[in-house]
Length: 272
Ligand code: ADP
Ligand code: MG
Image (cartoon, rainbow, N blue to C red):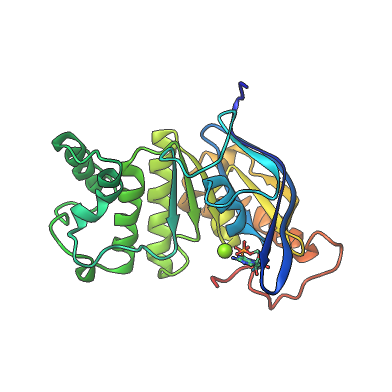
């Protein structure tokens, strides 16, 4: 079946079953994600953000409904979909270059040409000359740059980003937001970012989906207007309309999709 969407989620639900019973983590999610779109998922802890990414990645099979990737049902993980997490999971005994190449190695593609591409990617992510160093020699921000190069090395069409900046100091996080946004837009990649940080979502996204918990579902969608969308995250944060967009998103999260206010002390704006 032909599809213009990169991803299409059709009435997607997921139930976790374990010895404590069954729990509905994601209910009836419908969504189209277009080529090149940058989407953020925001919502309180436990509302199903990671579950949704796992369903998109083919790491989990939905209980009901379907995930289509370029029109074909997702049944298993694919190298076309890359995943980047809060923790970098670099191997301490491997050099930066060999860490960045690990996905290629698993895919059987560690040729000289592929390694040259890894070296070029390390330059792209701002790690000039770091290829022979080891993870323990690098800061948290630099390690996430390696993780980004590793994710891009296998040339995925889509990147799933599960809070990749939330453990970083603010100024490092702002630098990485600009790097990731610029690089993915330039390469024409589609991205789905999970974040607790509402300003990050507004600064980076074309479209933001607010999820509500129990069961996890999309309660609101906020499209970022083009004049803000076209800016880099750093520039977007300085735009006069930024604060109003942030407040709109804040209000939607407070409503929580059920009309009941949520407290201002919850964790929707803090990493967690
Ligand atoms: P988020 O990423 O938004 O914090 P998750 O997708 O991790 O949320 O979790 C959604 C819901 O599913 C939560 O209630 C969580 O407790 C539950 N859950 C997540 N993973 C599992 C699992 N492996 N087994 C059982 N329940 C799970
Ligand atoms: Mg999560």
